[in-house]
Amino acid sequence: MKPSGSLGAITRSKRGQALLVVLGLAGGLGIGALMSLTLHPRATTTAVQVNITPSANVIGAPLTRQPTPPLTGLVDQNGKAVSLADEKGHVVLLAFMDPLCVNLCPILGRDIVAVEQALPKTIKPVLLIVSVMPDRTAANVAQFIKTNLTAQWDPGWHWLLGPDSTLKITWLKWGEPLEPPKTNYLDVIDPQGYVRVIYPAPLFVTDVTHAITVVAHE
Picture 1 (spheres, rainbow, N blue to C red):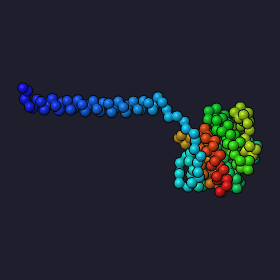
Picture 2 (picture 1 turned 45 degrees about the vertical axis):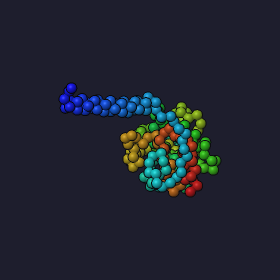
Picture 3 (picture 1 turned 90 degrees about the vertical axis):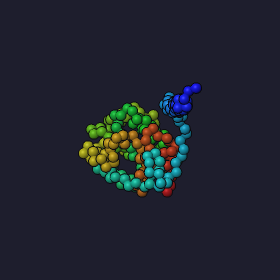
Picture 4 (picture 1 turned 180 degrees about the horizontal axis):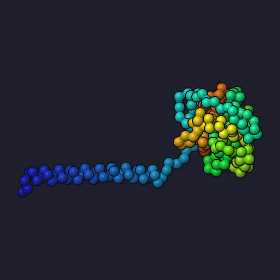
């Protein structure tokens, strides 16, 4: 017969082995779950319509009324001076894009067309686009429209191209550039001149149209 001390050691050893097995299984399950999430991404769900409330202070959800930085001293593709303050009384859609961009900018441009087409006919937001690169021209804008849009934006849009010194000040005041950059986000600004919600491209068109409709009727 083995001494009791040896038996106790064997018992403890078996318990230790059992514990190691349990921990190994748990670790394996955790790694398996992680690999499952990595290899099988969550299915995309249908976007849920948003309600404008003052509580959710995040991108992609309704915002508390946020004052807009100044946006003035810029001229559009037609050489017309444009100021955000002049658009009070209208819902304004504001985006920062590069007319030479070939990635998300064309997607956002087409999504804006889809939003405008989905809105009630009585709601006509003003579209302002600020160039995120200097030295862009009206010809660059015309080429962007011709190449990337299957349908035109509603009349009255402005692509603000310069002067370059004013553009740089505008980028700083509006958080351009950021990391990640604010380029290819759509700001919804209410008729009182407050930013209410910011959507990243690509847009959930139903969410954006619902938000615009709500702020237009407040």
